[in-house]
Every structure is written in C-alpha cells, then in structure tokens.
Length: 326
Image (cartoon, rainbow, N blue to C red; front, side, top):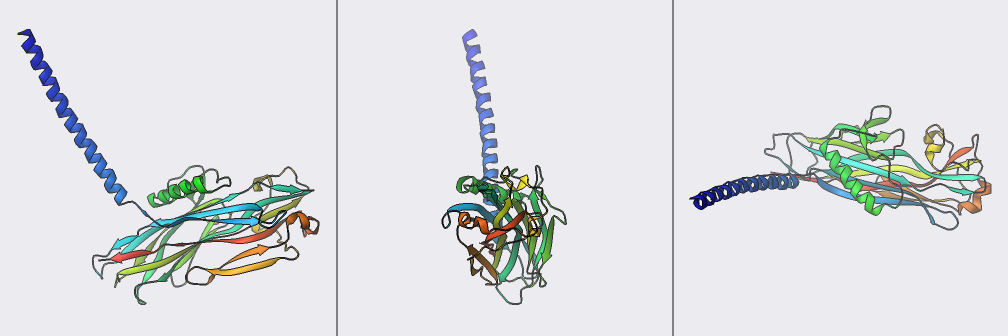
C-alpha cells in the first residue's frame, strides 16, 4: 500500500510539474511573440550611420585627423493611408555626434581641435505630386546632459549611433553620452517659409545633438515616395593659442563662444567647394594650406591670444525618405 501511495503521489507531482511547464512555456511563447512583434514594428534606420573625417596638415598633408562627425536618421519608412481624405503623419529622429583629437603643441603655440555652428537641417525635396501639402511640425531639439527622458524613436536613434561610434570612430566619444531637451537660447529652431523643412541651431556647440519631428500630410493624401534630405552641419577647425602649454582641450580655456573668436586665414590657403544633397543648394568645403609647423611663425592672433582656424565644413547628408501606401 505504501509503495502504491508513494507512486500515486509521484505521478501527481509529475502531472503538476508538466502543467506548470506548459504554463511557463505558453508564457514564454507569448512574451517571445510580443518581442518579435515589437521588433517588427520598431523604428527603421532610414539612412546612416555615416561619418565624416576632417584632417589638418601638421608636418605633411592630411597627417592629423582632428575631428570625426557621425549621424543617423530613423523613423517611419512606410506610412499607411486609409483614405485620401484622412490626414496622416510620419515621425523621424536624428542623432549627430562629434569627436575631437587631443591638442598638439609647437614651440609656444597650442593647437586644439574644435568645431562651431552646429546645425541639423531637414528639408522635403520631392513629393508624389506637386500639389501635396506636407508640413514640418512639432520639432524638438536635444543636446548633452547627464540624464534625460527621451522619445522612443530618439532613444533608438541614439542607440544606433552609439553602436556605430564605438566600432568605427577612432577619436574619444562625447561624454556623457546622453541627450536632454534643450531650451532657447541653447537651441533655436527656424522653420522654412513654406513649412517644408526647418533647421535646428545648437548655439553652444554641444558634442552630441538630437532632434525629433513630424511630417504632417493633409488631404488629399497622395501615395508614393516622399524624399527628405537631412544635413548635419558644422565648421571644423582648430583653436590656436599662444603661451598655454597646459591646455589639452577646449574645456581648459575659459572663453566666450567659439563663434565669437577672431578667424584667421593662413598664407597660401586654397578652399575647395562642392555642392551636397539632392536639392543642390547646400555646400561643403575643404581648406588646404601648408603644414602648420611650417607656418607657426606666421600665425598672429589679432586682438586676442586665441583665434579660430577653419579646416573644413562638416556636412553629412542623409536621406530620410518614406513611402505612403494604401
């Protein structure tokens, strides 16, 4: 009897364990399917991450990489339109970072990599029909901070950019790696007069920037591709200072905004310009001059001991195209 009783108890325990396992497996399957569905509905990388490297001539042409910039745009790749008379929207987010090399020294002069005039510009360049009414709406700008609460699409853009930067960027990454909603006058937003684009101006030149915004399409909604250019812009160059051998980065200087510093042009400089983007009205330029160590004695600040020397325009162009379907 004892043996039969123990056997029945064991069988009961096995049945309970199997029932519990089925429940756990069902729960696991439900969670897995939910995650798969969430992944399938995640934001798409529309373009990038792309990067641009800016070099300076130190002792020979292009032998000092001073700045690396990198950017990505994410958002709705496909937008469903249930009816031509139902307005729709597409959401997008951009993240944009800049890294700098360490300072170099020659005699009594310090050369510190830097950048200024940071901007993110977005613009619709083509729609399925010329009479489509599309509007740039609800723009928000973000810049460096210790902690932040970000929209999901901007978090996704930031994670994507971070994964790229840790693998492909050779210069020190921005620290801390975080974004927070910026307020005027730190960030100002200018809308184009026809509302088909806008520009985010980062007035304090942060090393990490972000934006999120909507494209609103009013009736009659046309299906097809909507082509959008995103420009991640800045001027890259060097702060040149006399008698500051202790300085190794921009933060070592107690200076006004870099954009307010005098700018110098070195002898025998050549500026190479070219247009970028599909609209053809944005430009990129490279500045070529003799090596800095050869020209050190000719670098004479005007009215201050610190000047800005431009080396190139940063202009990373991304395509933020999306398709409306029905």
